[in-house]
Each structure stands twice: as C-alpha cells, then as structure tokens.
Length: 250
Image (cartoon, rainbow, N blue to C red; front, side):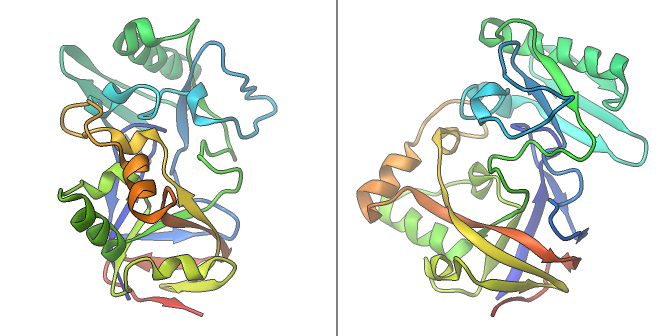
C-alpha cells in the first residue's frame, strides 16, 4: 500500500493544506491539524478547561456549507493566518494573539452572517485540537473504497469532501474496516486503528459551490447498510511519513 496524499486542516471546517512529509508524536494529531476553530457564541467550549464538544458548536461544513468557499492558509513559521472569500476583503492576522483572534473572529462572523450565533470566538488553545473525535489521531481513507462507492452511485466525488489526513492506494475496497483494533505502520510511525469513520452531513457539500448536492451518508447506507468511509487511528509510536511511503497493516 502507498500513501498518495497527505493533508492537514489548520482551521476546523476550512480548506486543507497539502503536505509532502510530516512528523507525528505519540498521542497527537498531525502538527497544526484542527489547531484553530471558530466557536459559536452559544458553544459550551471553555478554553480554560478545553475538552471535546461536537462539531455543530463550530463553524464547519456540516452546519454551514458555505464555509468551503473560504480559502485559508496558515504559515506556522510566521504565525500568520490568511483568509479570503468571495465578496469579502481578505484578512491576514496572527491567530496566536488576542488581537489577531479577535480580528479573525470578526471576519468569519461577517462571512457567516445570519448563521452566526451570539458572539463567535476564534480559539487557539495550546495542547488542544478541535477534532471530530474524542481521541486525537489521524484519519485515513482507502481510495479504492471511494472509487467503488463512486461506481455504485454513478458519479465522481472530490476526495476532500471526506477531510482525511491520509489517502492511500493498494488495498481492496473496504478491507480497511478489518484493521479496527490492529496496528499499522505508516512510514516510520506506528498507529492503532480504533474506529471506522461515520460520515456526517459535511460530505454532502460540493466544495466548488458550497451547496449540498449529494447525500453521501444516505447513499452509503442505501448501498452498504452503513454510513462509514475511512478509519481513524491514534499514533502509538511517533515517526515520519510522506507521500509515496508504504502503509503496512500488522
């Protein structure tokens, strides 16, 4: 099996950044993955005592399809986040400072318009990642499973609808579900697969238009009797992996 694509998503719900190579630590996400998030004003998230709260408390594709039209880029070296969107002047700010976060929150709140609830706050909480799972980890998608699903439904889907970190080839469709409870080697890192990924309404969204145009969860259930595509894993031994590296199930 071979790693074909690597991504991280610095701001929860916003655009991905393609990676060539990355180093991971045990028990952690890919560096800067889901590091930042815009929490709705009524979200029960406390940065002083951070813990997992469901995605609908944040600006995200599942709740706000139009956020896919925002282009986000994060420069980790210069600590600079750049955002742009149709009909709105771009912004660049330091998301690690209170002033920068306030400016980013105001920009995103303006974009959300009536979908903003209360006074949204933009967060950067050291040591916390705004993942969709309680456990920090890495998400993987078998491209052959996606292709088989596309054949069933008679249309192509942008793989980035599924917002995975690792997209790989070389495994029969759906065989990755047999990895749950097992370890895999990803480059020089070791991961333990702990669950299948249940697909949410975010996957309905067309990434070019910001509109819901394909009911992926319902189609998965119609054809397979489940709503799963991909798996989640925790890093048990840190290491490096890159596009082109081998992925081996143990």
